[in-house]
Length: 197
Image (cartoon, rainbow, N blue to C red; front, side):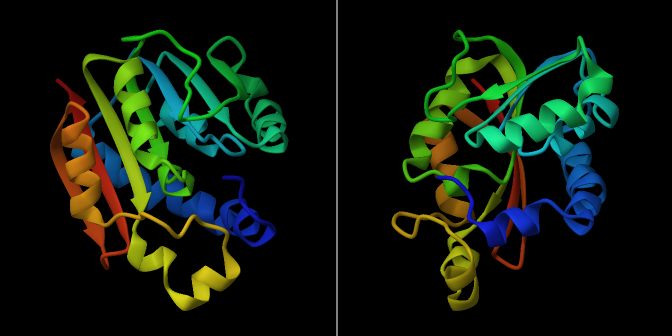
């Protein structure tokens, strides 16, 4: 599901960038560690901030990334020109990832799966493209936030079949992941490190 104007504004501003590069990055580093010399996939890359983080803070060797929104893909390609040769960004769909099975060392999700109506299919696809033993770094927004009257009015999220921390964890396990660590904030946001078994 594409973001509306309000959410694009919230996701593409200096405050969001600051939080992603500090708090969210620290969460992932402390929970899952570096991805040094790995081939990484980022799902739902937006304007490319996550790709920069994966390269610079996690020390990945190569990052493939995609987003459903062609305007965001163009913005990411422009932003990431300085990383030519290490980055491939294109239009794509997390429920139908155009990569072979067992292809990536790790996959990053900076808050994308809650936008997907069939979010379980997204988890299944992430599992498919990860190598055995590969890590899924997942940041997610929970039902409590999505269904809050203010955010429900301002933002465009699917409302049916949303998840909380436990439900997301169970879906990961049902799709062949071992959840190594998880953390949540106010019951509205969560971080997960899950390993493909």
